[in-house]
Length: 224
Image (tube, rainbow, N blue to C red; front, side, top):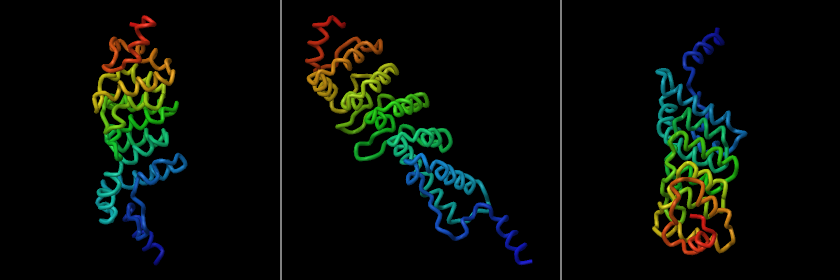
Protein backbone atom coordinates (compact mmCIF):
# COMPACT_ATOMS: atom_id res chain seq x y z
CA UNK A 1 0.00 0.00 0.00
CA UNK A 2 2.87 2.35 0.86
CA UNK A 3 4.56 1.59 -2.46
CA UNK A 4 1.39 2.46 -4.35
CA UNK A 5 1.16 5.77 -2.47
CA UNK A 6 4.76 6.65 -3.28
CA UNK A 7 4.19 5.83 -6.93
CA UNK A 8 1.20 8.16 -7.03
CA UNK A 9 3.21 10.97 -5.46
CA UNK A 10 6.04 10.59 -7.94
CA UNK A 11 3.84 10.44 -11.01
CA UNK A 12 1.86 13.46 -9.81
CA UNK A 13 4.99 15.66 -9.95
CA UNK A 14 6.88 14.55 -13.04
CA UNK A 15 9.25 17.52 -13.20
CA UNK A 16 10.29 17.73 -9.56
CA UNK A 17 14.00 17.27 -8.85
CA UNK A 18 13.13 15.47 -5.55
CA UNK A 19 15.57 17.27 -3.35
CA UNK A 20 18.83 16.31 -5.02
CA UNK A 21 21.18 18.99 -6.29
CA UNK A 22 20.29 19.48 -9.94
CA UNK A 23 22.71 21.39 -12.15
CA UNK A 24 20.83 23.92 -14.27
CA UNK A 25 23.83 25.31 -16.13
CA UNK A 26 24.11 24.81 -19.89
CA UNK A 27 27.53 26.40 -20.29
CA UNK A 28 29.19 23.87 -17.99
CA UNK A 29 28.48 21.05 -20.46
CA UNK A 30 28.29 22.87 -23.82
CA UNK A 31 31.98 22.50 -24.65
CA UNK A 32 32.03 18.72 -24.57
CA UNK A 33 30.60 16.58 -27.40
CA UNK A 34 30.44 13.62 -24.99
CA UNK A 35 27.97 15.56 -22.82
CA UNK A 36 25.52 16.49 -25.58
CA UNK A 37 22.80 14.31 -24.03
CA UNK A 38 23.27 16.03 -20.67
CA UNK A 39 23.00 19.42 -22.37
CA UNK A 40 19.75 18.39 -24.01
CA UNK A 41 18.38 16.83 -20.82
CA UNK A 42 19.00 20.00 -18.83
CA UNK A 43 17.25 22.12 -21.41
CA UNK A 44 14.27 19.79 -21.84
CA UNK A 45 13.85 19.50 -18.07
CA UNK A 46 13.52 23.27 -17.84
CA UNK A 47 11.32 23.47 -20.89
CA UNK A 48 8.90 21.04 -19.26
CA UNK A 49 9.20 22.69 -15.87
CA UNK A 50 8.37 26.12 -17.25
CA UNK A 51 5.32 24.77 -19.02
CA UNK A 52 3.91 22.72 -16.16
CA UNK A 53 1.81 23.69 -13.15
CA UNK A 54 3.05 20.70 -11.15
CA UNK A 55 6.73 21.59 -10.86
CA UNK A 56 8.77 22.50 -7.84
CA UNK A 57 9.03 26.26 -7.36
CA UNK A 58 12.79 26.13 -6.88
CA UNK A 59 13.24 24.21 -10.13
CA UNK A 60 11.24 26.80 -12.02
CA UNK A 61 13.19 29.62 -10.41
CA UNK A 62 16.52 28.02 -11.29
CA UNK A 63 15.41 27.51 -14.87
CA UNK A 64 14.42 31.16 -15.14
CA UNK A 65 17.51 32.60 -13.46
CA UNK A 66 20.22 30.13 -14.52
CA UNK A 67 19.29 28.07 -17.57
CA UNK A 68 17.60 30.66 -19.76
CA UNK A 69 20.24 33.41 -19.30
CA UNK A 70 23.02 30.83 -19.76
CA UNK A 71 22.10 29.96 -23.36
CA UNK A 72 24.32 32.57 -25.01
CA UNK A 73 27.39 31.72 -22.94
CA UNK A 74 26.79 28.05 -23.74
CA UNK A 75 26.67 28.86 -27.45
CA UNK A 76 29.90 30.82 -27.26
CA UNK A 77 31.68 27.95 -25.53
CA UNK A 78 30.26 25.34 -27.91
CA UNK A 79 31.50 27.38 -30.87
CA UNK A 80 34.96 27.72 -29.36
CA UNK A 81 35.30 23.96 -28.99
CA UNK A 82 33.68 23.30 -32.38
CA UNK A 83 30.97 21.24 -30.70
CA UNK A 84 28.79 21.38 -33.79
CA UNK A 85 25.85 19.36 -32.53
CA UNK A 86 25.63 21.54 -29.43
CA UNK A 87 25.74 24.68 -31.60
CA UNK A 88 22.87 23.41 -33.74
CA UNK A 89 20.86 22.49 -30.65
CA UNK A 90 21.46 25.79 -28.87
CA UNK A 91 20.48 27.82 -31.93
CA UNK A 92 17.60 25.73 -33.25
CA UNK A 93 16.05 24.49 -30.01
CA UNK A 94 16.99 26.82 -27.17
CA UNK A 95 16.96 29.90 -29.44
CA UNK A 96 20.28 31.23 -28.16
CA UNK A 97 21.18 34.64 -29.61
CA UNK A 98 23.71 34.07 -32.40
CA UNK A 99 24.77 37.72 -32.25
CA UNK A 100 25.33 37.81 -28.51
CA UNK A 101 28.70 39.12 -27.35
CA UNK A 102 30.80 37.47 -24.69
CA UNK A 103 34.13 37.81 -22.97
CA UNK A 104 36.55 40.66 -22.45
CA UNK A 105 36.46 41.68 -26.11
CA UNK A 106 32.72 41.29 -26.69
CA UNK A 107 33.19 38.66 -29.38
CA UNK A 108 30.25 37.17 -31.25
CA UNK A 109 30.15 33.41 -31.98
CA UNK A 110 31.14 34.18 -35.59
CA UNK A 111 34.24 36.07 -34.46
CA UNK A 112 35.15 33.14 -32.22
CA UNK A 113 34.87 30.88 -35.28
CA UNK A 114 37.16 33.20 -37.22
CA UNK A 115 39.79 33.03 -34.49
CA UNK A 116 40.10 29.24 -34.74
CA UNK A 117 39.35 28.95 -38.46
CA UNK A 118 39.29 25.15 -38.69
CA UNK A 119 37.18 23.26 -41.21
CA UNK A 120 34.63 22.52 -38.50
CA UNK A 121 34.56 26.18 -37.49
CA UNK A 122 33.91 27.12 -41.13
CA UNK A 123 30.98 24.71 -41.12
CA UNK A 124 29.64 26.32 -37.96
CA UNK A 125 30.20 29.81 -39.38
CA UNK A 126 28.25 28.97 -42.50
CA UNK A 127 25.41 27.73 -40.29
CA UNK A 128 25.49 30.86 -38.13
CA UNK A 129 25.48 33.20 -41.13
CA UNK A 130 22.58 31.31 -42.71
CA UNK A 131 20.66 31.77 -39.45
CA UNK A 132 21.19 35.52 -39.29
CA UNK A 133 24.61 36.07 -37.74
CA UNK A 134 25.87 39.59 -38.39
CA UNK A 135 28.91 39.01 -40.58
CA UNK A 136 30.17 42.56 -39.97
CA UNK A 137 29.66 42.68 -36.20
CA UNK A 138 32.38 44.62 -34.41
CA UNK A 139 34.01 43.44 -31.22
CA UNK A 140 36.42 45.41 -29.05
CA UNK A 141 40.02 45.85 -30.24
CA UNK A 142 42.24 44.02 -30.90
CA UNK A 143 39.64 41.62 -32.29
CA UNK A 144 37.35 43.88 -34.35
CA UNK A 145 35.41 41.98 -37.05
CA UNK A 146 35.39 38.31 -38.02
CA UNK A 147 37.23 39.15 -41.26
CA UNK A 148 40.01 41.04 -39.48
CA UNK A 149 40.31 38.18 -37.00
CA UNK A 150 40.65 35.64 -39.81
CA UNK A 151 43.34 37.75 -41.51
CA UNK A 152 45.16 38.27 -38.22
CA UNK A 153 45.23 34.50 -37.62
CA UNK A 154 46.02 33.80 -41.30
CA UNK A 155 42.97 31.58 -41.61
CA UNK A 156 42.83 31.81 -45.40
CA UNK A 157 39.86 29.55 -46.07
CA UNK A 158 37.86 31.25 -43.36
CA UNK A 159 38.62 34.69 -44.78
CA UNK A 160 37.62 33.40 -48.19
CA UNK A 161 34.29 32.16 -46.79
CA UNK A 162 33.56 35.52 -45.18
CA UNK A 163 34.36 37.43 -48.35
CA UNK A 164 32.14 35.15 -50.42
CA UNK A 165 29.40 35.85 -47.89
CA UNK A 166 30.04 39.57 -48.56
CA UNK A 167 31.83 40.61 -45.41
CA UNK A 168 32.77 44.28 -45.66
CA UNK A 169 36.57 44.70 -45.51
CA UNK A 170 36.32 48.43 -44.82
CA UNK A 171 34.70 48.03 -41.40
CA UNK A 172 36.95 48.23 -38.34
CA UNK A 173 36.55 49.36 -34.78
CA UNK A 174 39.79 51.32 -34.79
CA UNK A 175 40.03 52.77 -38.27
CA UNK A 176 43.46 51.56 -39.35
CA UNK A 177 43.30 48.01 -38.01
CA UNK A 178 42.66 46.37 -41.38
CA UNK A 179 45.61 48.17 -42.94
CA UNK A 180 47.86 47.12 -40.09
CA UNK A 181 46.95 43.44 -40.36
CA UNK A 182 47.13 43.37 -44.15
CA UNK A 183 50.55 45.03 -44.21
CA UNK A 184 51.83 42.74 -41.46
CA UNK A 185 50.71 39.62 -43.27
CA UNK A 186 52.13 40.87 -46.55
CA UNK A 187 55.53 41.35 -44.94
CA UNK A 188 55.34 37.68 -43.97
CA UNK A 189 55.04 36.80 -47.68
CA UNK A 190 51.48 35.54 -47.33
CA UNK A 191 50.39 36.71 -50.76
CA UNK A 192 47.83 33.93 -51.20
CA UNK A 193 45.58 35.75 -48.77
CA UNK A 194 45.64 38.89 -50.88
CA UNK A 195 44.64 37.09 -54.08
CA UNK A 196 41.63 35.81 -52.17
CA UNK A 197 41.02 39.21 -50.62
CA UNK A 198 40.98 40.95 -54.00
CA UNK A 199 39.03 38.43 -56.07
CA UNK A 200 36.63 36.57 -53.78
CA UNK A 201 33.75 39.05 -53.90
CA UNK A 202 32.51 41.73 -56.33
CA UNK A 203 32.55 44.43 -53.67
CA UNK A 204 36.32 44.19 -53.36
CA UNK A 205 37.28 46.70 -56.01
CA UNK A 206 39.40 48.94 -53.86
CA UNK A 207 42.28 48.59 -51.47
CA UNK A 208 41.53 49.40 -47.82
CA UNK A 209 42.94 52.76 -46.84
CA UNK A 210 46.47 52.55 -45.51
CA UNK A 211 47.42 49.19 -47.06
CA UNK A 212 50.64 50.43 -48.64
CA UNK A 213 52.29 47.03 -49.08
CA UNK A 214 49.16 45.53 -50.59
CA UNK A 215 48.84 48.54 -52.89
CA UNK A 216 52.35 48.02 -54.25
CA UNK A 217 51.68 44.32 -54.73
CA UNK A 218 48.41 44.95 -56.56
CA UNK A 219 49.98 47.60 -58.80
CA UNK A 220 52.95 45.41 -59.76
CA UNK A 221 50.75 42.42 -60.57
CA UNK A 222 47.94 44.36 -62.31
CA UNK A 223 45.33 42.73 -60.09
CA UNK A 224 42.81 45.59 -60.24
